[in-house]
Amino acid sequence: MALRITDDCLNCFACISDCPNEAISEGDIIHVIDSTRCTECVGSYDKPSCIEVCPVEEAIEWDPEHVETPDTLLARWQTLHPGETPTLFEKEEESA
Image (cartoon, rainbow, N blue to C red; front, side, top):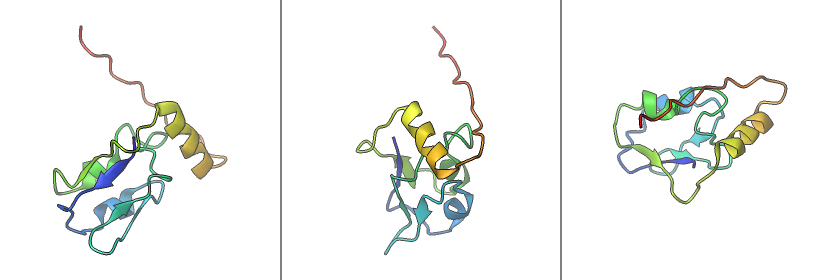
């Protein structure tokens, strides 16, 4: 699923400069994530970089209105980065 920015956003620009897909931009009040460009960093990082760089713990959250499979996210990444090779990470197996 894509991510979304909450009202807790400080508009610090850390997420904008770190997004590999240019999916984050300035909104009227807070920054916004374009769900048509967000890949949750699939293809670039092992976890969403915007969440990692954000100084506010709950300013970026999963968007339940945009649930997508890893294959869909990777296909989007490949469309956004033609000719590039994605970085793929193995998911950690959950303990039984």
